[in-house]
Image (cartoon, rainbow, N blue to C red):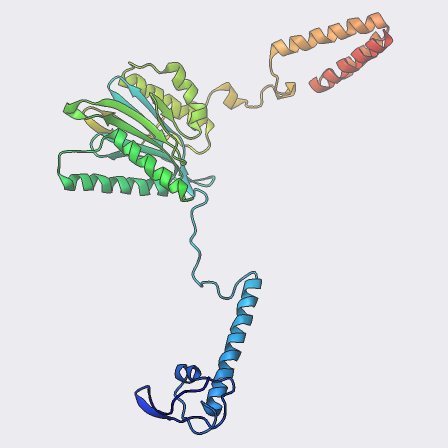
Length: 377
């Protein structure tokens, strides 16, 4: 721990005289001198008073840092945490669209959807167009978060431009766009940051226009579940419109029949789904190309009896059927007959007579009279 030499040492570009200390070192060494500030050395202890003070300051600073670090680790809000905001992902959709309906017909594929953008339960935006053309032979439509749909459309437009710039005569068809979007949705799902869309991809695969090709209709959901079918519905329309399509759709139906079917389904969705409006948009894909219509309003009918008197039958506890009323009368007569045989007809008749205006009370009266007849027997 003592310097084995005496002489001159070049430090910070200056020569410093080091002499053998006249006394043994106490807690100091040449490393403390070289790593610290430049000190004027004289006889006696290496580094002198200044070196000792510097060492004490370093030890004190190190001790304070340990105390601060321990306190920060024990606290709920660490003081040594980064000052920037943590990365956040979308946890719920904000502006959303609802059902998309798509069917194949003899000459192509027809896609329809309304133009409402709901901000929560508020019908905020009434002209959000959720059916877009991609390339020359593909349609993409989506329900769910509209900003995610815009992101996907921009991505597909970049893909179209990239293919055009290559100028190699090859273009992506509908099945390839469907596969590409499935990979995108799956990657975002695995990152815990999914795109909140139910997508429908319609077009021709294996060529289009003069090259022919087969009609293609596929769907993808936010967790990248993908499949194809002859008709597809997303959103709440899967509960309302899909049964209608299953009943009326045929493989060789004409474009007029397909349009009537899609409009009827959209009309039913408007009647029953509070996140829709009667302003809709249609798009079709044929061998000649893609056509997307301007939004238009559907004709609606509000003179249905269930709309005029929606609570009809409420006095019958929702049963509202003459057949059920006849069954109740038969039950009453059966209980009275059993009670008469047991000698308790007056009690049972009084119960039923007093409760005849309430179905629930009538059921209770029948049970009461039947129990009394059984006990008497």
